[in-house]
Length: 299
Image (cartoon, rainbow, N blue to C red; front, side, top):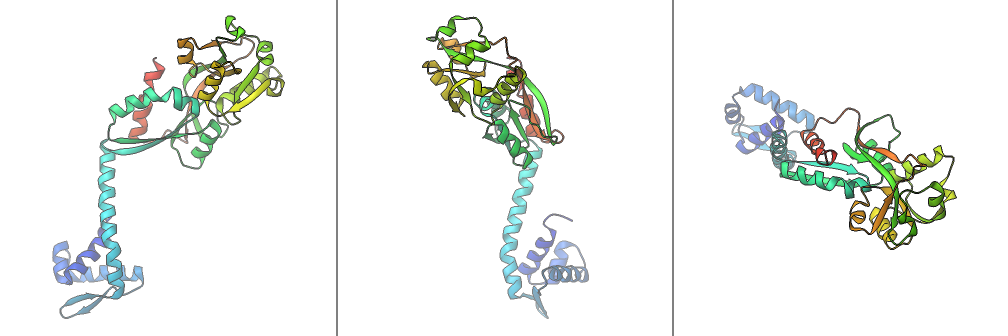
């Protein structure tokens, strides 16, 4: 049965006011059409037409239903056209999620390439910290997302798409910037600005410290922030130091505003994760977006 068939039949009967004429248009017998309409009326539990010698006349219920049927017909036609365009790759929408660092510093070139390849696809980007992205995935709000730390939920499929390294960022005005690397003691003694709970960056740092039997409470923390950009700005003004992804400080290091220093005492390497629920989503636009990741993977 076609998506529109029940309401389309009703519409034709309503507009023709004649079962014989409608039956000829639909290439069915009049008894078959009469039985079809009887079943349709039973579904609504109300008579929709009054039969007479001249044809049919809509009842009050039939008049009411016709107002909705016009909208139903238009909506179904529009939805069929939209699906056809999406299947053909001509038009559609795609919503993805990303944690803050990935959204601000890694995805822009990927999105630029995707927009050129799929100009008729409207892209929506949900930016949250890693923990919140996991919640949106489980709740069905997202089909695909990118996060900075593993999500400990068996329902979530996780695939590494890029390796990253955390390190200490310091202002060039800070004496620590003269060093080639920092010890854990160097970092623990300096005023420090860190990411908020729930962020992937903080999760990686806390795990690395746990392996050394050290806690964040042992550091001289002066501020927490959910904004990597505000942290780099404050560090550039020598308000403190921070531990962030090398991607976050790339431009500031290039300009000479910041130094990026490793901490050999800590394992701060990580694999950035592409995440989804269950099997990889079967969606041509998602597949297209994933293919565009090569612009940063090969950089």
